[in-house]
Image (spheres, rainbow, N blue to C red):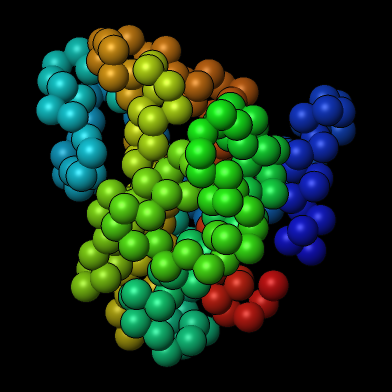
Length: 227
C-alpha cells in the first residue's frame, strides 16, 4: 500500500485532472489522523524552538520565514516499548527511505547529480543510517541536532543560494498518548525580507502538505506494524 501511494503521488503530477482529485481525497483522508498545528510566513516564532542552523535575521521585524508543523497522536500502548532514540531512528529510516522514492527524491538527485555523495540517495543506504549529527541524507539534508533525551532531530538543508531551511522531527509521549510532529522552516539567506520560497506558492505548498501528512501517517503505522 505504501509503495503504491508513492507511485501515485508522483504520477499525479503528470496527470493534472486525476492528480487534483486524488490529492483532495487523500488530504481529506489524512486530515482525520494528522493535524496541521501551525502555518505562518513572517518573523519566526521562537516559542516553537530555535533550530541549530536558524539565523538571527529570521527573527527580526519584516523577516519572511515559512514555518509549518503537522502532528499525529496515537495511543502509547500501540507502539513498541522503545526509547526516543530507537523510535526516531526507525521512523526516520522508513520516512526518508520512502521519500527517496518519491518524485521529490528523484528531483533532489537530479539537482545534486554533480555532488560526490551519490550513495546517500539509495534506499538501502538510508535504511542503514543511524541519523547521527553530521550524517548527510540524500545529498541535501544534514543532521544538525539530535537530542534523544527529549525526542528531537533536526535536518538542515541548503537547496541553493536563495533557499535554506530545516526539518524538525519531534516525539513527545506520556503514559496515554505519543505525538509525532514534523516542522518545516524555510528562508532566503540572501534576503530575509522577501518570500521567494517554493513553499510560499499555494500549489507547491499543498503538494508539500499532503506529502508531509502522508509521511507522518505511514511512518507511525510502520512503528505500529500496520504498514
